Amino acid sequence: MNVLILGGGGVIGQKLGQALARRGHLRGQTITRLTLADVTDPAPVDGAETIRCDIADAASVAAAIPPDTDVIYLLAAIVSAHAEEDFDAGMSINMMGTLNVLERCRALGTCPVVVFSSSVAVYGGEVPDPIVDHTFLNPQTSYGTQKAIGELLVNDYSRKGMIDGRGFRLPTISVRPGKPNRAASSFMSSILREPLNGQEAICPVGPEFLHCYLSPRRCVENLIAGTEWQPEDLGMNRCMMMPGRMWSIAQVIQAMTAVAGPEPAKLIRWEPQADIQRIVNGWRFDLRPEKSIKLGLRADDSFEDNIRYYLEDDQPHA
Ligand SMILES: NC(=O)c1ccc[n+]([C@@H]2O[C@H](COP(=O)([O-])OP(=O)(O)OC[C@H]3O[C@@H](n4cnc5c(N)ncnc54)[C@H](O)[C@@H]3O)[C@@H](O)[C@H]2O)c1
Image 1 (cartoon, helix red, strand yellow):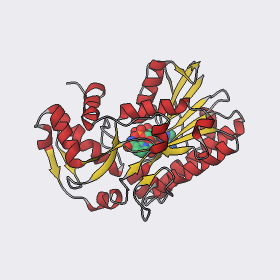
Image 2: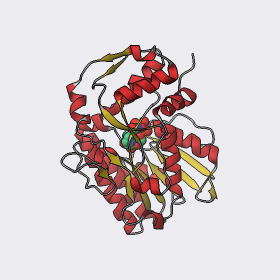
Image 3: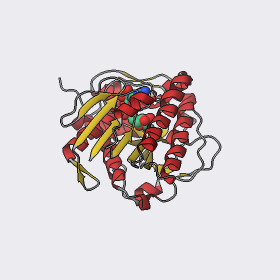
Image 4: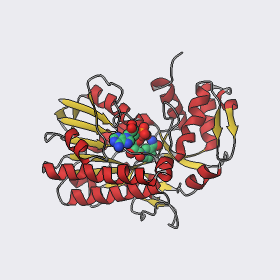
């Protein structure tokens, strides 16, 4: 079993690589090769090879996906605020990059499993609450639009037997390790991560702001579980929400205080930011991910768990 993670240098890609290397098997077979590919050299992971690949470049994609590739995780993307600021980059990486990967699979003719990372940013605008898996996609950002196009392509290439695709609309992954990124949701990790590390952070929305969250640990478990499914499990829409849970900013801060004491919350500065609010207020929050839950995926049991997972898995040690 030859497994490739495109976007393997990113937060989820690294954690997925580590989890697959530890696990050693997938879909009933031993993983004999595990490759992490990214536009810059991914950090090394024990048990995995690392290579460079720019998904916006078809030749680079062809070189990264040899004919014996069985499973491809397509995590490479630029995130929401970045794709909003740089339309051309969003189109060439998020949209054309996805097409390049699917076209390479089609050219191979081997029908590899492709696990596509979509986003709940495909939902928005004038659609009724609650949002269910089959609510029509009405993205209110270029990023969401590029992910929605990716979903349609994953479905069509699967229907044609060119890939065995499945796509997951990820909720916001928190607590995300590392540095803030250019996602509009970046503050949803930094208001926890920075204070847990003794640093100040800015919260650009009010304490009542509600959103859907999932820990990186559970996200990786869900991606692996979803890889195991057979085509008949998936039905006629291969793309679905990954479970998360709704919490307000006040609740996630309370969870941090419950786990780590009162000091971290004192490091949060409340400074409204109109550009961030404009994007995140377009996101919908009453999400009901029924299909993936029925198929066995799980959300975190509490936000305290998200905080504990960060402290166990990621907190930098002095
Ligand atoms: N983390 C979240 O909250 C969240 C939520 C919804 C969807 N997603 C999606 O999940 C996926 C992984 O997210 P993440 O949090 O690990 O993001 P990340 O930014 O940490 O990782 C994405 C990786 O893609 C790489 N990349 C960018 N352009 C590339 C290119 N042209 N060729 C190859 N690689 C390229 C980046 O270098 C980066 O390492 C992304 O597709 C993202 O859109 C994430």
